[in-house]
Image (cartoon, rainbow, N blue to C red; front, side, top):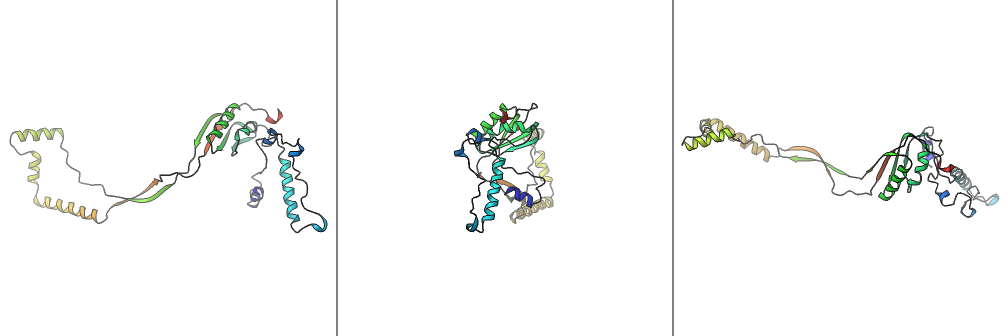
Length: 253
């Protein structure tokens, strides 16, 4: 089905689809065809012949032929059906990826990159051990989780422009000295010398500012806030780099 989809979208000349047990589990379990009890004859036509042939016999024949072709591709030995050191990168998304690591080490080019996806930490640990055993280095595992963000505009009050006057140490010492001598401080003199109209205007400005803040004159900022809960299962991605020395074919041993 995947092969037909690639061809239908005009990608058949760029993508190759193979149905194989890259881990070689049939050979490990003794189901590589040597035991007749565990062998299924996919080449046998499941439909009847002659007058008993139904209208769906052509579709059934095509399905059986496809299954027979796929069975011929999968010889039970595992591997990627590639020559030694030809793949630039390999991605594994398997229940037992550590079984495919020896075949990946044979097919991948020196300094090639491999990535393995596993939902459980136990799978990741066994895969990492197999990668190190077969000459991979620069191993790195990251956990990918689905974290959604709520994006919305948040209103903030405007920053006040009139800051309070903070006296310095020299001003404080001068005020203490003038207070001890019974003289008005410099700050008090500046307040008394301030014109009446300026005082009134500053009061009007502060009143206008207060009225403006009460009337909804706020700043809107676009913010992204994460949700408190992260839904979804864990996902561990393990990355590694192949060594410089080519490794032998696991099926040859």
